[in-house]
Image (cartoon, rainbow, N blue to C red; front, side, top):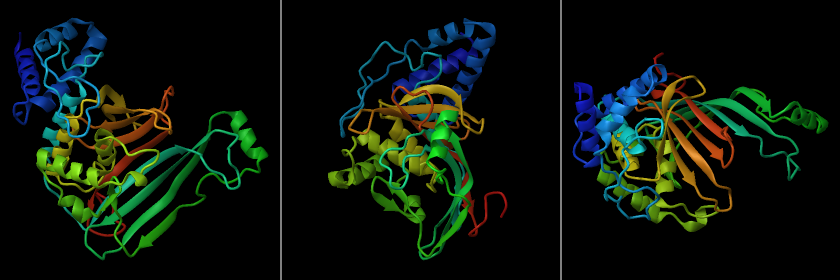
Length: 354
């Protein structure tokens, strides 16, 4: 094997035996995986054959969702940590993201800023139980989460609102109803005298409390399990989720929030231990940015089976997008694209402008 193949095999063996990973190999492995996929597209299967040969010794745990409190199995299987298209499995991707996040510098500010573009189906009209047409509404929201207790917060909602009908016939049905408004007609600036919250389940966390979350994987997992155990079944519909779904849902909010690089790395390591999470390989988000799609399939508990996806930038470990896809649908039913986020020094400021 050449040097690249030797280093690739060593990195894969390291992941399989859960040994400490040095800062460079795993993220480099992801980048090499990306280059390898592009090479195969142009030059055939030679690189893929070499990559598979280098990886056959890898030992992985079994798949499937484990009950809360059950550790991931380390029983050997014949599979290597590669998906069908030759990209890395979810565990490898998440460990790579953890290493990348851990090397990021600690930053701070008076406000955590996010700008997100949300797209979701129209699901309500006044005085109508059922909507006779299909349409999607997209709009942008900016938020400023105060880090200091008692400091004001702000959101700007309804920016660049756009309605997209599934077909001309759907638009005609909407017009026959009198063209009721489906989206916020103009943006609205909303100032608050209290801090805005991020959520872990039904637990509310201010920006400051998020910064106090553990930076060690085991301690963070222990904290999440304690919060999970404190959740009341009556607060969930149609049923309280399993721990895997609970952590996955929390990660969607935390990865877009003001957690420290250490906590971000620990969270990725917690996710890496959840075998139900799958890697879908390299994709592009609605802004054309390249990332790795990770997915979790949820069973039908009365609200329909589906798939939740996170798109993570494998170079920076930043969350680019999250989306929900209902069973049997190729397009997302709802989608949140994170256009910008970071610390700023004042209310109304944006990253890179203060």
